[in-house]
Image (cartoon, rainbow, N blue to C red; front, side, top):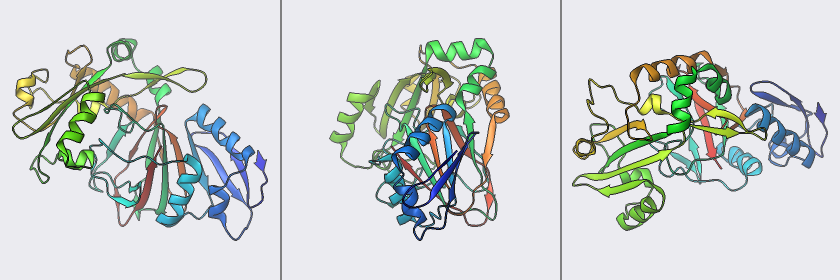
Length: 322
């Protein structure tokens, strides 16, 4: 379907991701995307509801200023990355880089901040420069994952939920690689952080060396206007190997070391076999989004997981949350 506006028209196409391609040669394609017409917004919302992701192509969103303008136009007020475990750098305001781990490593599939008491409902990615090789952002349909998993596993996560455990150090630069609690919560004010944690987390306490929190969250969520059930957790990433952490349910042990872990919401361990099946299923359901300069990708964070393939060369991808 094609819509015409004051600036560029847009051709929308269903798929995963759904596509929204610029049709026209206006002098300001960035403004065309930042100022969608009411009809274009309605189509975008419908596609995001049914497919969980929409890729805008051809709008020449190349700089952080362009991306911030577009992200605010598409999402409204942007949210900070507060409580997140990824070492993100703010590029401008609440626009962050989407670098993730070392370029040589795979960023495994996850829902953003699914381990926290709050999570963004929508993500907006923008590509200033694709990598020389690799570096695709991957998207995974959470409903497809839910249906593909054995009933025993999906019902365990649906009924029990997941409890995430974090012990964050007081200072940055710990050999564990874990972010400090001032970095995580973007403030060094202990009273402010504890007030925030007590109001939102399942439990929180100061230890001799840091901040220990637990947070119980759903393992799956109903998403979309049709209420389809979607996989919503990253327990496969946070779960610890028994050879390294013999008893992840022992909170006294957690007080003596920094790191993170995941158990079922009822306090029992998540079997290694479950995590292995989930990881394989996520790989089977993965769809790469191969970036072109100026692309913008909207993702329903509850319905769709995301990750990143390894890459070489320079790569500039922005992200904003709402």
